[in-house]
Image 1 (cartoon, rainbow, N blue to C red):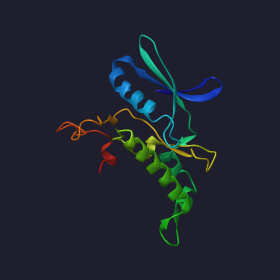
Image 2 (cartoon, rainbow, N blue to C red):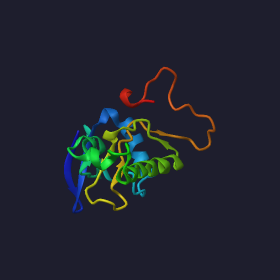
Image 3 (spheres, helix red, strand yellow):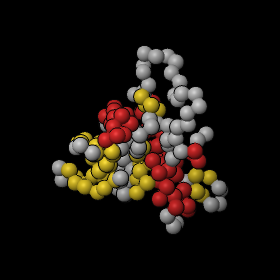
Image 4 (cartoon, one colour):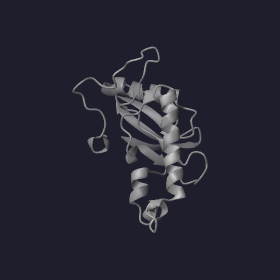
Length: 165
């Protein structure tokens, strides 16, 4: 579950995770900590836990890319209807996404569940942080000393099936 909250005077999204999923949440926290300073990766401001839940205070967005794509009038902003090509606005969004992913790869993180719902958007258009990558629940943190590492065990499916290549 994700709730609205406030931390040190800033609006945050509070992600509540059951303690039984602590190991999975720990991976997400480690990935967020490793990527905290990149403008195209969502920031984690704090973590707290009690007997039942783990709470993450994350940078709060206005909406996700899926909502943006489906909003009335957005198609014209993303596709040049005469040429059938992406608009400069669409290319800026893609550049932000690729920039965030490229950074994650440089710090050894593979996202493994990239989809429009895991890309968040902010209203203050064309600051450096309009679009950010989010949700590292099934991310893989690679060991830099291991030259061959399978991303998943054989027979295990990771990610959202509709977005798997």
